[in-house]
Amino acid sequence: MKKLVYGILLVGILLMAACSAEATGEIRKIGDTNAEAFSELAGTQVGDNSKVIEIVQLLPGAETMKELDLRGEKIKVSYGAKKDSLPQEEIFAFWFDENDAMEKNFFYNAVYLTLLVPNSDKYVLAIEDFSFSIEREEMLAALAERFPAFPPGEAANGEAAIAEFIHAHEAEIEEWTSADVSRNKFFLAHPIAYTSR
Image (cartoon, rainbow, N blue to C red; front, top):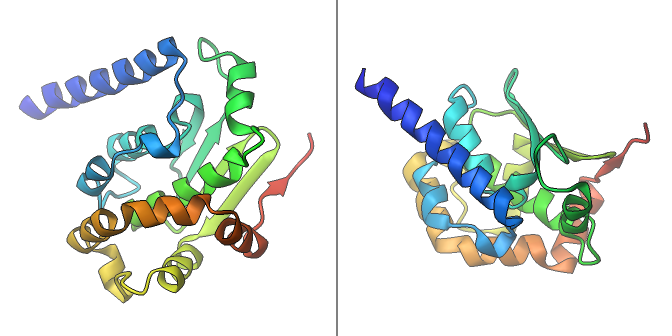
């Protein structure tokens, strides 16, 4: 019974936080994230829907999440306007600004989903006609190439090792996903797809 009450409280808090952010019109940016909260969620499993939702709600652009699909061993997050959400113009201004926000946010979000949800085989992020997908092994290889201290092999699935890595490299992750050179190199190897309707 206690678990049910705590579960209901958690969902209520998450909904209030999401509604509060939507009401103020503030969309979380990369600099607004919290490594401490992320590291507490290390080792989350795809099947633990409430924790995956919590992770996605901590990521940049969370207030624009339209749909979360956790079928199979993948995580698919679709962003965009939905009924009773922020105005479409505000969502587009956030994602399609002149500073490559879509690329930065997709890259950053893929990094943290990879770090925090080790049993997912693939991560898919989409907004309107743009979609980015990457296999877990590809993202782990990119992390290991960029960070010599990245936990090798099975250690990349360990909660403690990943929490420690996040604490030690939070600023470097932000810099890596935001810097033009590293971001362009990453998306050259793993392009964002455009699919017209």
